[in-house]
Image (cartoon, rainbow, N blue to C red; front, side, top):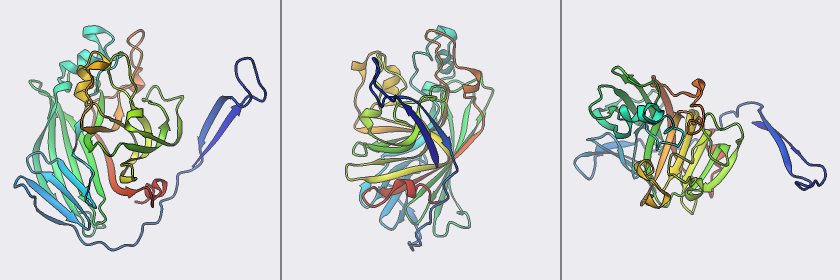
Length: 353
């Protein structure tokens, strides 16, 4: 729960009319208590070979999830005949370089990241195994994918674990964790998070966190905590030179739905960042001008534990030390839950454990 104070002009001035806001402040009062969980009974989920021989399918009441056995990645999540994911999530440690990332030339941040081949990093599956769910998750199925993420040639990268629990009510729980391996030659990484693809129809976004505009760890002082709504196109910020943009920080929950309000909500065990775009990360990284951007058939979503700060190195100093994102061990737990906005309030849904 938040309390907000705002201050407005009491009378007209030569530069603004009465009622114009000149200052505001927000203070957290207390955390919201968990909401009651509906006591509905669901059939236990079942695991079986997928339609294609190289996939593993988990089925429940009115939903199914398909994992590629060669990659350990979800290639299909369907709820009530509506597709949710098209592919992902996969680990993501790269971002399209900003003007500030490019500051410093050959000794700058972007040059260091590219020397580590983070722009070319790929995820490789080491193992995919079924495991016993936690005792309280009766009727659920658990799959653990061990992966390694690294660029070509370099002898260091990230070992990542995707610990999935598919619940009978259709919830997907992901504990995403990892740690660096090898002798790293750079001190920071662009981001730590996951990326996945959505069907283009899931272009309505609501979130509770900082907004309404973009924000990053070192550029968020002027952003308000609130409940915000947008479409994917409006989340995009059209810089003169295409680059990382549209991030929202300190997110408590975010929904991705179609025009009827059907889709899913994402929550986590800690505040997270998110962004969504019709342009791929590779396209944003390579484009020199806005006309180089190509709209894709799907939506690219990033859910991040954190990003490296933005700084001002294109014309001044770089990122301050307290906003450096270092290659260190990490862990975050996401929950993906089907939602219908015509009958469910995401503020209440997000509070259910």
